Amino acid sequence: MIRDYHSRFFSDTRFTTVAVISLFLVGFWEIPEAFLLVPVVALVGANQTAFDASYLYFARHYSTALEKEINSSKRRRILVASELEDRFLFPLDGRKIVAIGFGNDFTWFGWMTVAYTALGVLAFTAGLGLGWETLATAGTGWIVFYLASLFSMTFVSLAVGWWWFVAGVGEQRLSEVLSSRFGMRMSPDNVRPLGR
Image (tube, rainbow, N blue to C red; front, top):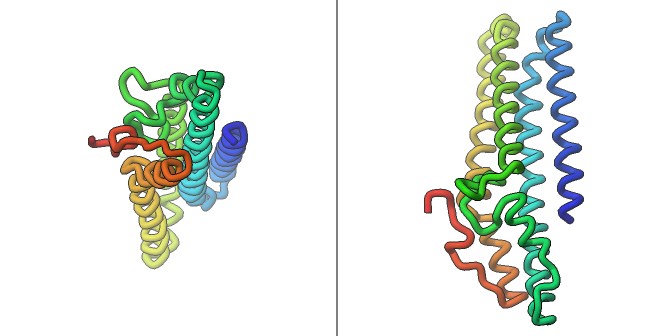
């Protein structure tokens, strides 16, 4: 499952990157309306890769539960992939924003999440800035429609992302099911919102 996550994530990232670069090239190639699609593609790409990350959470929590169950039945630690992933990617039970751990839990995986996010924000902002003149010539109605649509979807995406990832709702739901099936209970300290 985790292999499938990485495959999907990088496929989505490649698609978004190529689409954004292509739109910038088309925009500079005298079709400035293309710039106005850059923020939309960046936002869709951000949502898609966040969806991919939710699948990674699912896969890691499930495989961790299976490993613990197998190790418990064998009375020794035969399977250690989840421990390696905790140290190498990001800890499941630590404080994090999506895949970005803090302090000693910060990893290259976390850095790549920061880098892709920063590049997405930069593309979003640059596309909007470069397309502004074109949007302004379209008239007030189009300006209001475009900006209201774009910023409402951005706000909703950020709010739902905060609720699902940072507040820990997604991981809490996984914990409830895994607890009832495998008898393992993640303490509230293990799956905790950012501020706690």
